[in-house]
Image (cartoon, rainbow, N blue to C red):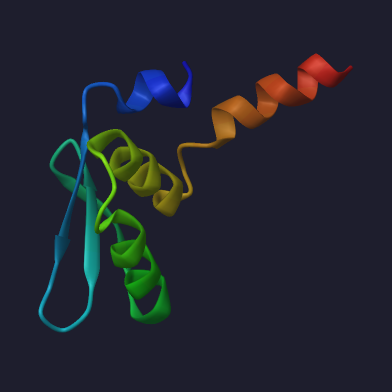
Length: 78
């Protein structure tokens, strides 16, 4: 499953709290919380982005949705 397949159904969402936290959810379940500079950078990145770019930014911010493709690319190099 590619990252594009993963984000095609727009499964990610985020909430920005008034105390500066950004909570990122996958299919309605909070999976990561960004604080401080990470939260500021994320909000700046998604502020004027299209929906696909926002979904991709949330997938990358979680850090857990890139591992499947890493294994495939390593095997392709062999």
